[in-house]
Amino acid sequence: MILPFCDPEAACTETADVEFKAQFDPSSRQDWCELIKDIVAIANSGGGSIIVGLNDDGTPSGHNVGSLLLLDAADLTNRIHSYTEAQFAHFEICAASKQNSPIALIRIGGVRIPMIFTSPGTYPTGPSTQKTAFGRGTIYFRHGPKSEPGTTVDLAAAVERELERTREFWLSGIAKVVTAPVDATVHVVPGDVTLTDSQQATPIRLTENDAAPCSVRSKPTSYTLTARLNRTGIFGERVM
Image 1 (cartoon, rainbow, N blue to C red):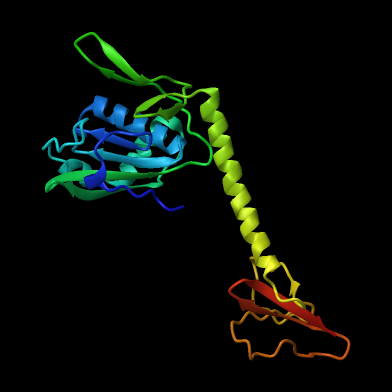
Image 2 (tube, one colour):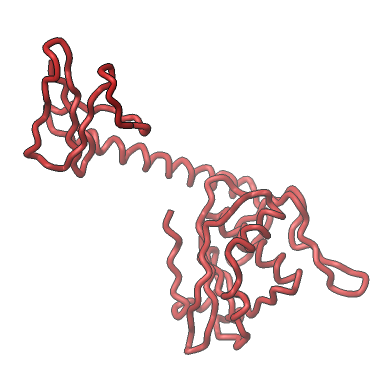
């Protein structure tokens, strides 16, 4: 899956797939909880980006983003797993700039099945007070520029995205069959093809060379299955 593209220079406001954060302190539990909430919400909504180093109005905040750029991606995956039990790693943290000010860009891919928080994201706000970024058993999506608990509409949209992905996958396979030559026979080739000296095995040859012979007679009572591989699929014929 391709990660979404985001141009920081053109980003002037937060949207459903773009979130701004003025800073990120890896030693702050609050910053971690809020970051994970937004990553999960964006992934559940189909993907997007988080730009760290920008104020809410899209101007550079001037805060140092070096600690985020040095963050090990595996550490972020582990943190997400600790709250969701999902091994989510479809993201990229990279350096960028806006108005010559260094910023960090987190590009986030979408998930096929929405992630649910299995542990609460709480952090202290005072000597005896705390705030909950997300609760146990909640599922977050993007509602405009905000990450909020999901609704029936959000779940329906997630199901529709997965159905569309499945439709595209099947249609791409159908297109390969439709564009096959008129006299071609389509064969399903197993993924575990191995070399063998067994006489009972079905010989298969894959080639992009149109001049290659289509079949070879091995015995008067046996046949050899060969195939030609081209840009639209695998086509073969069986010759007695």
